[in-house]
Image (cartoon, rainbow, N blue to C red):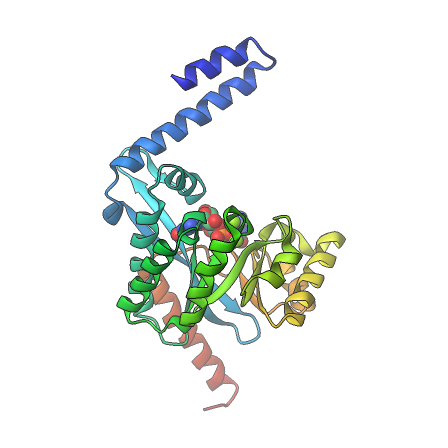
Length: 292
Ligand code: C2E
Ligand code: MG
Ligand code: MG
Ligand code: MG
């Protein structure tokens, strides 16, 4: 029993507090692993959607699909916890396919100009088989691939760079966009920007927190916006929570924004409702300004 071994080993060592939390974390991961192995993915996993807003027009231009798991035994488990486990136990391929099918089915009901941004993990781009499976799901959905963005992280790219590059090249050739997620948190960000067939970068939430009060963050976000614009890439800023952060970002020229200030990730039904209100607000604004 690894958890027990770990407990014994560390109680003889330095900190009892650390060892207890460490054991708890291992136990939790074991529980997640067990529940995930037994899970009926189709039934237990849902896709939620978080709006990506163009702050110039105040319209929702896309939704990011975010996985939500409600386990019958563990209750709701956040993706930050179960995605890495799924990845480790070899379930991620199946999970991604279930998620992508569901996300595309939802997106099929949205107006054609609303995009879908979908997260890929290391495994999804580490073999041509898995990339081909994704392509098959996109084609079967009937959705115009130009409405899709795939989000990848630098970490996922680094596992097998050549293979990852060829996988995302295939998706890009189909017409899908490729977004570098959590930009600014990895290592060789800048060199990779050139080596990858990207269409978009997503500035990590960590640079946005208290943006208006943080001179370092202001400089970083400003340069990232300039960099993406110079490279002809679109840029989404993630994690905007307050009006102050939004105002600072607007000042810096940010255009596409995602964050709790606009909406948390919401269910498929709520996303449809959100789009209706989005359209209604725009129509009302047009009428108020005397337009058609
Ligand atoms: P991510 O792709 O960077 O997604 C953004 C995360 O930030 C989401 O967390 C979202 O709910 C959260 N977020 C958005 N706006 C705000 C904000 O204003 N404030 C704060 N505090 N948080 C905000 P979530 O849904 O828990 O997902 C966490 C991570 O799990 C994702 O980070 C992504 O790496 C991974 N993930 C989620 N769904 C999937 C999926 O379907 N497939 C894969 N491979 N990974 C996924
Ligand atoms: Mg993402
Ligand atoms: Mg992100
Ligand atoms: Mg993240």
